[in-house]
Image (cartoon, rainbow, N blue to C red; front, side, top):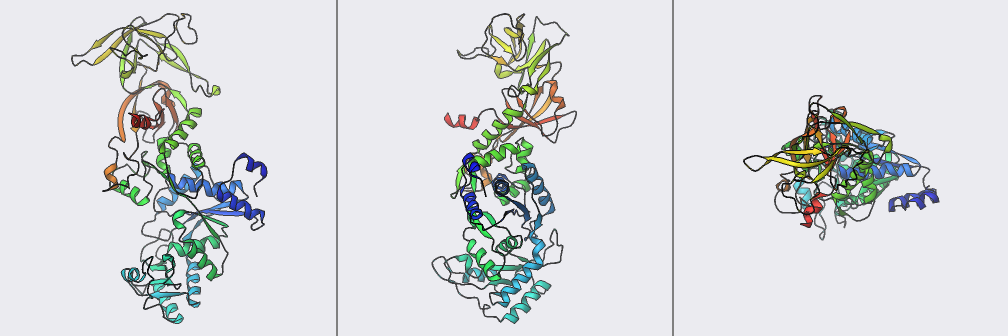
Length: 557
């Protein structure tokens, strides 16, 4: 049980309260949970809450968590997804005690099904799916018994064995529970337990041609593993009655199901089916595309496991579904990277500046802190030369009153270097500024400034002679509306056409030492991570997030 001291540190959510009460009552000696993904796609941000909850419960309370793959649908599952799921959970910072599969229990589940038949609680139905649906009734009208419901136990056992042996084609027969066709809960109206599917399974091969339905495999797998608290999302509330009925009739270990609310993110889709569409139709470049809400996509974009766990902790565990602003997720990664990301200067839209009174073919070493939030990160050397690059937006020919960057006659400080003053500029025939001429102020070097000059603007810059060309992928939200599935038409109609821009920028030479996945704050521009597409002669950076919430600003206009 949890100590009073821990309770005071943080209030318990309702599931933790249930577990604490169970332990206080001596109901269990240890808590066992499970994370049960179906290996039919990559994990996404919605799964992160379930991961943090299930694994977090057994960190808070004495016990352990199993990883169990719900692999009962062979046509959609693959070992690629199995491996990606394991990688994502470990990257999130969690480790399971046992790696299990629903397919581990196929023999046991088959015997459970025969037990129900022997108890006259299950029967083989020859009805088509359409006929079964018609006989189900409606929420206000009772269903009707299948014409095959009265089959004898012996005939059902024989037919079920023939189903297993492959004697019947797909869809020709099912095994159904015999409960109540007038039940108020539609799921209790003789639900299907097994269907025939002649398909190759990623683990059991062709050993089986009948597969258990989720509702039959789920609770029984929990029971086999002695799961004490089976945590599901709210859509499984109607399924709980069947979960309990099967466990009761089979007289097996009484696992219990508890539900919490799914958290939906705006500007995001987390349906695996829809995400698969995006991948297969080429709207994104794979499951780990940095615009995808998959954990692998977020990792590639530069999100940290700490930021995702913080996000899950902040949204909490609740009983009602609601929409979460994706801005909170972006806030969490900004908070984390601000503390740990090294600072680097990178110019995304270069404008050449010539410091006319700086010696030619000479470079001077300047210094700047790697991270002002972390003194231990130390300082780095930055070469300064006569020609440098600044951002085009940092120069204005006719500045407004509150423009504190570079303009004719105005002064700014170069980060970690000198104060410079704009003396002149060169304009092309089309009116574009192509070059700015400045002079630096003697004795104004950062840390040694003896001039007493006070300037309001500080610019990032890169030495032209030492600049490293880098490919920069500016990612933004994949969808342009808050809920892409709520409107009319196809959800893909709302894909944001500006979700990716690829540009070439110029970086200070320290970035050559970056490693894949390493995150940096590009001064004044945002947080970026080195992408896996990088090579020694071509560095590629993904924008994780801007320094500020630009979408919020756009909404204010």
